[in-house]
Image (cartoon, rainbow, N blue to C red; front, side, top):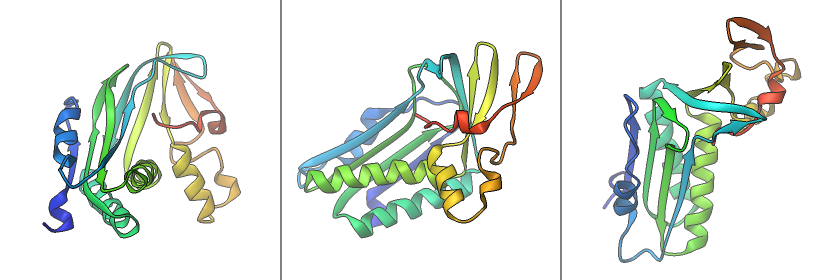
Length: 188
């Protein structure tokens, strides 16, 4: 079976739930001694603020191309059998999965290393955007992996903390300036 045939990539629109068993079963096979997974869920707080939900948007054709590229790159660095990646779009309530990665390999080190690589690359390069909705406001979030990569590519220190969405946050009905370095955190 060709590598592409052993890779399942899905962007789930309209807030469809991620069926973890579907992706686990996809990568499970008798020749693999390890399955590594990452299940990114919506947490209920961030920096002392109560999170109500996350909202994801994406440029789907480019996101799928980038996910395929990430999986292909993982295959070139590790001896992998199957890869499954799912990411939700739309609203993801607290406690639900927004992204899931499953990787199978003969040996655990390949599966674990590749799984970590894939989720880090998703957060650093795939055009999927997240808005964190709080009880008293909302903010578009940048993943720390994306910010670090942008700064590493020489976009300049003057951009640090201001990113694609500027330095404004909507809190209630007011829009206020906000230092994005305080929000640099991790998606999941």
